View: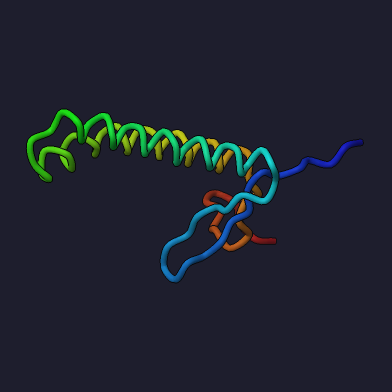
Length: 91
């Protein structure tokens, strides 16, 4: 039986938690996400007239891209042992 290879590992950064890539596939997903975020920024910045226009224009697309990245990293990453598992009692 083949063991599952996780793309991401959980990490706590103070009160914030996140995932970091540990395999080549995880790094590719991370780099593609960064490239997409930069492309969105450049595209919105070219058509905006002020800094506030740029910030307002990138908020929704960045949230969508980061949500997709979060879903991918959660589904392909190891489940953090320090998260509470609701609905399951300790025996």
